[in-house]
Length: 77
Image (cartoon, rainbow, N blue to C red):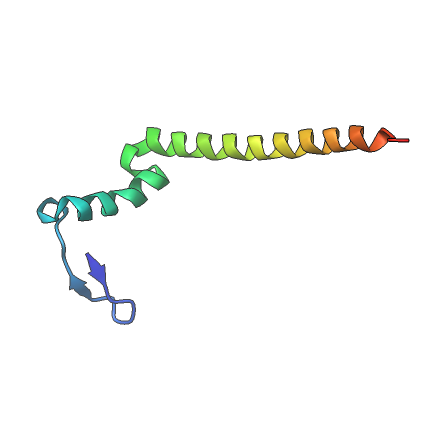
């Protein structure tokens, strides 16, 4: 359903069951991305994946900084 941002009126209704397969796929991407498609479990999984990604970024930066610090201590005389 498309809603007019200015008036709040309905501009169009497009039932997903009548859409072409390519349109159905594109319309399913956002609910899958946000976890809405899987209900409560999908949202928990989405949160868990987000936290895991943040953890991997922080761990990678810490390991990189530690390795860089160790290399800075060595001298190539």
